[in-house]
Image (cartoon, rainbow, N blue to C red; front, side):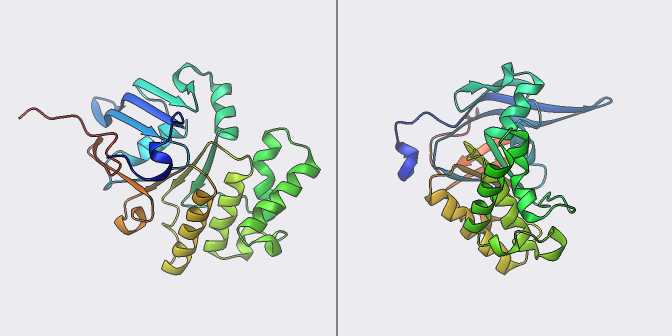
Length: 246
């Protein structure tokens, strides 16, 4: 059964994975982190990928974010096969097609919030006046514009994460990837961050959130569960796990 909203629409998927495997090797030791993953994520979906430690969710996030390479299979992002790209092309995809929000915020301590949020636009070649204007608008959208000239050590953890979200959205990416975005926050701040994600999703953003916490995953409209590198459940019913022989 298809989920509600954008899930059943005619648009092409933002993400299509088919037969994706990933194995890490250290000396003679091998660990297969992902096993034959098939996954479609459509525009406007808010998807949580969850699982226990060692389930493969972080590996999957790194592959989706073009931060790591799959060993085999196909990954199509916004209509383009990622496996055919050069390192420079992948860097361009990470800058322009994907917004990242990490548990540790990854704000540069010597820059103001305005400068931090504007940073992706520097790499995209946008002129200074425009990027500062857009960065200010992004900070305003997460209720941080009055803190624009402050540095990260002058604000709370929740404010840092809101600034990181603003930075991730400045280039209007096709995909927003959030890796344990509430992991370093207290309960109140975590709730505020989830409200920001919900608002972005209502505005049309496609969000993939990685978490090991069921209560966080439940804030998404779709939940995918990984266990031992395999997709074992998809609440949308689209990407069913492979049938196991009895």
